[in-house]
Image 1: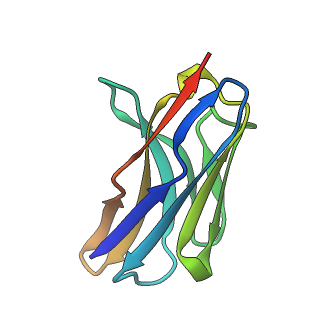
Image 2: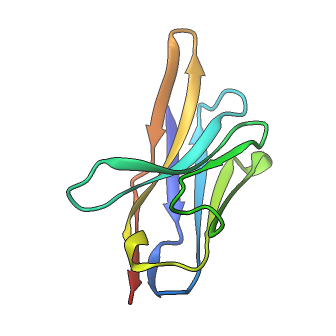
Length: 119
């Protein structure tokens, strides 16, 4: 089992910044792809940013140039630096880790952290 613990969410004014952190622990094998997803009320969970074990990143178009994903492999931690925040960034943000097993890849999720951007 893998546990993901997120922190850093909160309330911020439009134009402000927040940094999310996600610490992974438990039975982690190798250096896995990790990422951040978000879910608006009544909507599906969407990808925000992902980072491979080798450090290759991918971003949703809506956050390119404003958000930066990074990782510290020694700490099994992934970060999301969010800048120039907009009210539409308000959502619950979830950390994701893709763990490879013999039978395939399994997605682990954190409990979610609320980000609220006021106008």
